[in-house]
Length: 174
Image (tube, rainbow, N blue to C red; front, side, top):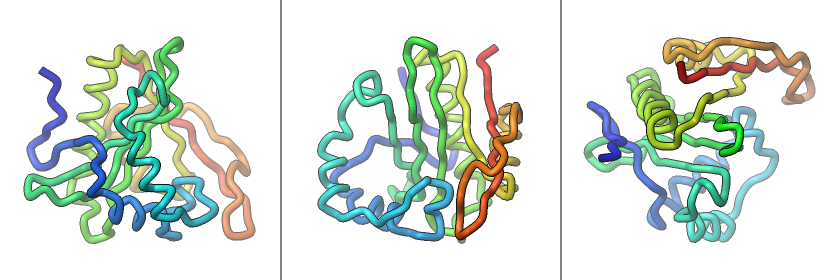
């Protein structure tokens, strides 16, 4: 049985009812830096995205799940992206939407569930993530889940008029 349930949260597929939640996340300029977003998304485009969200990861090369608590409140999202079946790897991104819901262990629990799912059910060999050199919370989160810092990409992202370095982290399924 595939279980994406933790002690405090569970991961679930996107639903049409998530339109407002995703619209708020995608249009929050304070997180555009971590999502590499440059422009706002319309509700129309997000609705179209949701209509195709049921497609298989092997087809669309991405899996986006909602992090939800047991009161069925959407807390954030966790993604597998750049899914590469041949090389058995994918990128990972995680976001808890509201600042007052961060640092409560939801991201850690979601990441652990996704790692287990990726290695057990998708048969991936490795996961990776890209983290801004200044993002101490994400560096700690991924490091605590066994990801290793394997490289620094100098002047990688142009943000608010200046370049920022970005770390590459990797977790190999041993």
